[in-house]
Image (cartoon, rainbow, N blue to C red):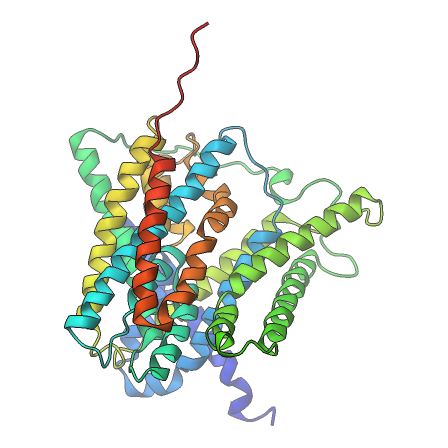
Amino acid sequence: MLSSPEAWSLLIQFFIIAVALIVANIIRRKVRLLSRSLMPSALIAGLLILCLKAIPSFQTLLDKGVMEIVTYHALGLGFVAMALKNNKIESRSSTLKVTETGALTAATYVVQAIVGLGASILLYLFWNRETFFYSGGLLLPMGYGQGPGQALNIGSTYQQVAADQGIAFHGIDFGLSIAAIGFLVGSLVGVVYMNILRRRGELKVKTSDYREAYTLQDYESDNEIPHSESIDKLSVQVCLVLLVYGAVFLLMYGVQHIEMGGFGKTLKPLVWGFNFLWGTIFGVLLKIILRRSKEAHIMHREYINNYLLNRICGLCFDVMIVAGTAAISFDNLRGLWLPLVIVCTLGAVATFYFVRKACNKLYPTYRHEAFFSMFGMLTGTASNGMILLREIDPKFETPAANNLVLQSIPAILFGFPILLLVGFAPTSLTNTLITLGILVAIFVAFCLFLFRKPRRRAEP
């Protein structure tokens, strides 16, 4: 058994991901056009694998199913690692600005959902009812706003729901393709617009002439466990992440065995698709338990290490991007190129103009820094936003970086109703139209909050 090739089949998939990442990083550093485009190495690695899939022998070596599973779990584990970190709000980012940034994130999801859903309904009614799903446009905010992991989760659910209705919709490949295109939009459009602003004189180039100096506090906090004693500190972080993720599985497994009637047919796949959300909730709960244990003197050492959790999070998201892009099947997209181009183009234009307008209103003193960080995140991931921000604010002198990091919790709270609508819409065309109407109402509410007039202080 152990000496057979089957024992190595799973590791071969990770070997492919590892080699692709290393080669992509070398190519990005050596090819000036790619380095100037600010495309993440993980996306280049995924595109390399897509090109190699044209070779029949390589296509048999790559397991599409394993890549989808890796994408699914990398998303959940990455969010758990993020939730476990001890985040501290810095003075440069006020609570109000963090809340407004979270609202802007959720509002952009709504914009993308309205655009995508409107386009998909029209395509379903007037183009093709056999291979395109009327709720398929809701994968736009999942791919652009959330990334490959969530695009895969919801795409898989939509693919199954569409199949039950006799529609041959390849939701997994459609969602993953939107996510891959989102990375390209965030990188290429962001760089082009940045150069336009520079030529107009509206944006000054800022360069950092020094390397950041790190202190011991950047790697660990006070009273932490030793780096290597009876158990390595990295092992402790991995165990905490897996402990939380195990609790997530028990929750989803328990819900799966609850009798819900016809409603459960729609809800249960959605519960499995929201592994990242449950991971965030359980991660925060574990962090609270550990903190209360220290306050009660039950636990005397600090077990959470932000630096190592950041590395785990970065690894998970890099692997997620590579595996998610590699899992795309061009054969399944053969009849979906037109809706893919329409949905992605409309989504890019709407995201660009809405985020720019909102940033001009909310952040008048650093509107460009805020725009590039938010646009990069809302078409790719938070790392894309940070890469674009570094080009014009390398020392993070504006609050844009802090806003981007701290907005995740208010964004989840603001965006929770949208996630519920994602599960409600695909049940029928009528419910999809109702969802579109509710999304428009939510968008109006967000606009009233984001574009409200500031209160004037009373004259003394």
